[in-house]
Image (cartoon, rainbow, N blue to C red; front, side, top):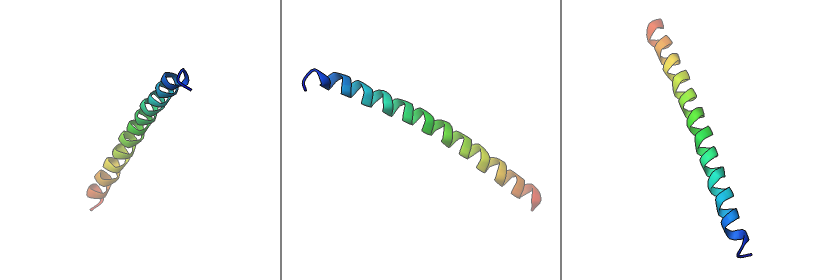
Amino acid sequence: MRCLGPFHFSSKSSFLISYTHINNKLLSMFNFILYLYFKEMTVFW
């Protein structure tokens, strides 16, 4: 159990890093889509 500790911790941290990286990409894409949408709305109005 004690030897599994560091490995478990490292896998958890790497998973968190990759998750946040994917999350940031999705957020930036979402913000870009919202920006385009509102730009079109202002042009339309």
